[in-house]
Amino acid sequence: MDNKKAQDVIREINNVIFGKEREVREVMLSILAGGHILLEDIPGVGKTSLAVAFSNAMTLEHKRIQFTPDLMPMDLTGFSVYQKETEKFIFYRGSVFCNLLLADEINRASPKTQSALLEVMEEEQVTVEGVTRKVPKPFIVIATQNPAGSVGTQLLPEAQVDRFMISTSLGYPDYESELQLARVQDGRDRMAEIRAIIDAPELLAMREEVNSVYIHDVVYRYLLNLVTATRDHHHLDRGGSPRATISLVRMSKAAAWLAGRDYVIPADVTEQFPFVMAHRLMLNQQARVAGVDREDIIVDVIESVSRPDIAQDYQDKTQGLGL
Image (cartoon, rainbow, N blue to C red):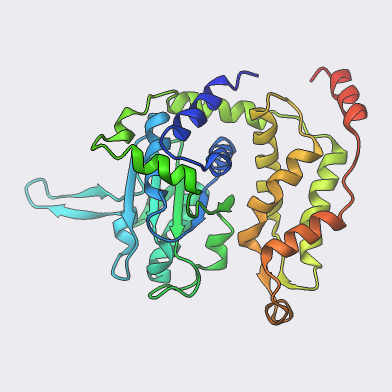
């Protein structure tokens, strides 16, 4: 499996996003897995730059829309206007008609506008005035939300949160990375210098390869045991949904493919579990009183679920199957 170009994309992004190698890799894995990304961050840490960098490196059409309280659903999906000269309605496309949409501060908009993203995120299509229209492929949403409790924000609907494959946070760069960032502010548009590594058809072909990665039944069971453990955890009102299970499968496959393997090992699942699960967990009152956070619960679940030690046996079986 040739993952060289995907690795080249990551290296190209790291040339302009300093000190965030792990987060850049996770975003790339989600894109390879066909998912959407939720970033919970304070302003000014490079979220827009991250989205633009990925769109440039992968030759994707990108758009950015600022979610504000007065943003309307039609701003996302589009609307029709009657043209007197032709006596026909002309459809004007909304912001979702692109390959990569940066939805900035998504939790500042009204629930009605937030929910307008649901169909297009799941089905890659929008329905306006009874007419269904497909958005371009690939279609990727990188959404940012302000930290909970920030002024002017409201919680995202649970159904929408669940449609994001992963969540992560860029956060402040470390000292050396921020020093490097300060040194390169010489008036150049560094985003314009990003080389185009792949295009949309190549990305879709990579997704096909990722989808074909093999998972042994033992690993499937380990993966599901992790997800179901969140549903029974004493500090949670709600754990991972079946959609979380599917997301963890796809992210584990992407991690294996990027590592140059055509089969998933338990370590791939363990590595991706926090990114897939963090935004899906709902703490109960007992957890809030005890000061337990989602990261604590994720660590507890990983430690409580037995991880299969099947490295050699697993490789023998996959080789025997010609994989």
